[in-house]
Length: 121
Image (cartoon, rainbow, N blue to C red):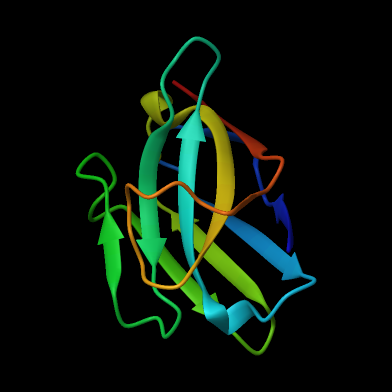
């Protein structure tokens, strides 16, 4: 499975971005999808996750109420709508796929290359 993120960029604090992650090479609906973020020198952080059907969703406390994860299995794409962005949201955001049940802790099977999000104050 190949994952390609897009939609990152530079935005002012309080603004919004919508990240997309397009999957190919596998049966998309077999996978739970997570978004992670990581900056150089920092630990990887779970951001949001969604199960194959889209009816089980989880968020990190730091983004709950501001970010929304969704998926379109017909388009093989998962999205992360990010609102009310803060400078501390600046990171490289990665999409990851795990075959089977959703988990925020189990190591994903596949990773994208990431997309940079920069929030200026």
